[in-house]
Image 1 (cartoon, rainbow, N blue to C red):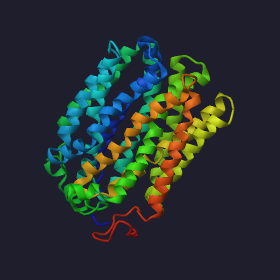
Image 2 (image 1 turned 30 degrees about the vertical axis):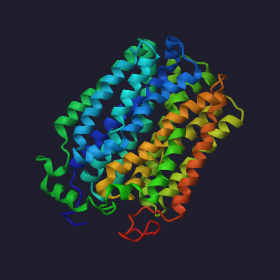
Image 3 (image 1 turned 90 degrees about the horizontal axis):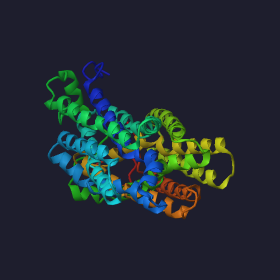
Image 4 (image 1 turned 45 degrees about the vertical axis):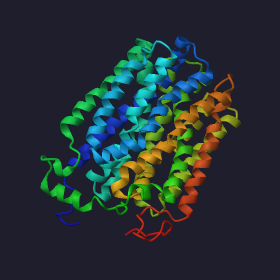
Length: 430
């Protein structure tokens, strides 16, 4: 590596990466903290099990709508503008959640939050392509994905403590304010493109511009990009994955309360344990996937298989609280450990000029699982204990693993395909 291409110490693009991580951390906490408040909100609003599932899924009704439009706007208008507006709406909606006077108002607030947050990650995809050299992009994507398990590990005990100390309304307000603060910080510190950043070191700018097209596919028209078979396969994989993942996260505190018979603050701490293990597993899995020559599709399929089997074992094999918690930890590790690997794989398979809309489409289809999963679990429980319906998530995750394995077996490898080589040509890494 020459001096001109060496990564500068304390590179500014990593400061951008850290800020994207914080944004995703806060957004994910604001969408998920309702899971800790659900036991109190059910009593306050007198909700049934099925209606509670509808409330937990209402966020995703809006979330799926703005995925592709959000990515398109980020490409045309600028990811900075889209992210800032989204953060403001997310923060306001998060604060308002606890004060919904009735079920229709609560559903409307959650729907509005979903509309705003749906544009965030497709905008991130544009930032990843513009701001990060190809060799650094995988680590940047992985960094933001740490927010998924880490926000739950931090949010659950903090939310439980806030509810126990004050009230679930106070918890929603205190956890909604950081989104508004981050909107102001992002506006002041991050431009749309590194070429617009006057504080960027010239050597660093040359490196980014020279290498950011690596690990991406050649430019293409929007419809042609979205119509590729690999995109359809990725959509199906992600739909089944998200069906299991979000239902797991949203129903987990309720399940733990059933199996442990502890108070809300203790439930918050117990809920954090699986996510703590998942955060550590994500770090080691990301490092391993960057070093191994194994296709990222096989790595993802293996993780999802572990998660699905653990959830099925948790249902079909009897045991005490310790055994149940061990299996829930294993399931969380399988669910979350490959997220950084997943989005790196997706970005390597789509044209670089259509990263926002392409990621938006995969997120759009995938996050219908956020609507389906919580409702299916509530329905399968049939009004009895939640454990009676939780196991169905295991089947969804095993099906997701099977689709990912098929894509990997057909040759959709970790490296970009050659222009005009066809969708199924396997290209060796350099």
